[in-house]
Length: 227
Image (cartoon, rainbow, N blue to C red; front, side, top):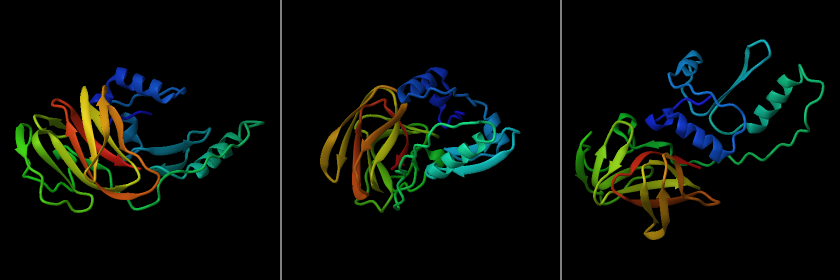
């Protein structure tokens, strides 16, 4: 069940493209009016609800992780109506357990841990980086339009984030490029060609770092997530 978080996620074409890109073979329902979301009193992405053959909710799991237990519970429910189930092939749970930077929204409606120039909402404005950033904080520099759920890059648009994580991902939209620098070292350029999640930093261990991004004018950025 796909319930959109951002405006572009309401679009059927974008959802179809994501389903194809991720190799999802099962049906995906669109809950654009939040009917199912509200009926379950849900507040989280992702959330798992296991429903038995009689329509009763038997288990709820919020967030990532717990995959082995969820798999076990699914098999338990299926065994009530099946004579034989496929062989159990458990996979290791790679959900990070270390303390890491929380999900970080960039638009003013849900903004937290912002530590830069005073925000000027819904219009182009100039910003400057502070001398330093506390853990998990971020700031803008250059020209940005800060909207409710996204920021839109203008001339010289940059963003800094003091992160702690193995990997850093950012929901981006539009067409252009994002230059990526970590701790003062240029690590690459991300080409943005669709509204979706992009991986900017990837590693095999948790690290503390200062991320700086340089944006092509017109690109949109929505929220960071961390692995």
